[in-house]
Amino acid sequence: MITAIVLIKTSVDRIPEIAESIAALENVSEVFSVTGTYDLIAMVRVSKHEDLADVIPGRISKIAGVEGTDTHVAFRTYSQHDLEAAFAIGLDS
Image (tube, rainbow, N blue to C red; front, top):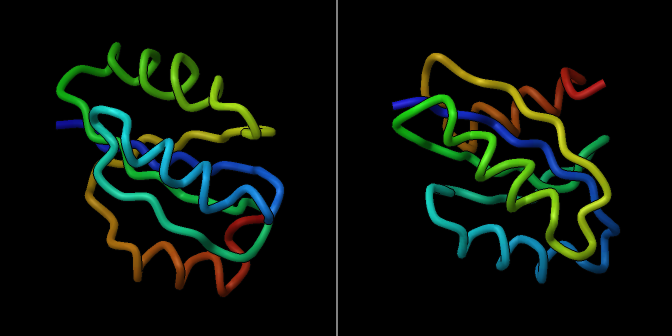
């Protein structure tokens, strides 16, 4: 299983709507809001590396209101707490 962390930039007023749209996508296991450079984080889990291209640029980037994404493939599974702590100490810049 491959886990990707997708950082998503959007306008603050669209966060709930976009989070709901992303959470409804197949292979998205978690979506949560953070404060910092990016507004949302999505955890995407797929069985094949090639499937990431379908889920991330193919689906997430095309959701209305998504202004940008940045993707990091992780070799371990991070919790929401791990990622929020990383953003709190400035690893998002």
